[in-house]
Length: 163
Length: 181
Image (cartoon, rainbow over all chains, first blue to last red; front, side):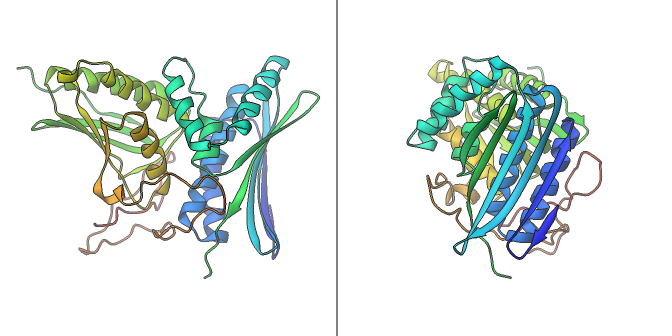
């Protein structure tokens, strides 16, 4: 973890276990609450971290992954980026490319999320996580792939309360 | 008629209980709903649904005062449940009313998505109704008027101490209290 006047970052390398995910979300929420002082922004960042970490737990090959939360300032604006990194099978990488491509092309995140919710009734899994991050978290979702390493990041600007 | 019989479930960090009150069923959900929760939650909602039909309940009130987080897999459980009500004959349908905690901003956003899924069935309580607009599509996250999360159990305006949060570890989580209307 590093904290400076320009921002703060926290990173965990872990073998995802459910309890660890919940604890990490709480830790992220505490950090954001301390640095941002805004309950709404904190809850969005914590939700995004949780959803991304659950994805790692569900889909990572080899069972290991990392999560990083970074708060920064650019041109007087505060930004947050939550990213997870893990290994994934070729099939999963292909599915992610399709899913995140579709998500990013959707002009209206709320309408897209609503459509995914309606469609989820017919599917076994939820498949809501990434759409939720974009719609409820008001964050953009990106994917980068290097070999079998997958990095999914969620980023957006955040408000900060003066104390 | 056989009395209401859905027994409480208490797991580490998460609990469910339900009771029949007049024409309504009061469903209380507490704790953190994560990846391990959907099986329990989905099963419980099915039982509540069966009982709501048997007792011809007009509504199920979902009390979320101490529900600190719900993953998307848990949201899916609610979608499945609400969809099963939508598929009923009109006369059999009952309302789902979410009684939210305005100090937990995610609840407003998540339950609003459920309301959009079935606007005729899903209601969000008055406390949160004034803040139920969807999150902005782009731009800076908005400042909340709700303040930051208190670190200790907060005293309410009546002077009583708010319920203490449940955590997985069993330690008080110092979660926010419900603000009085």
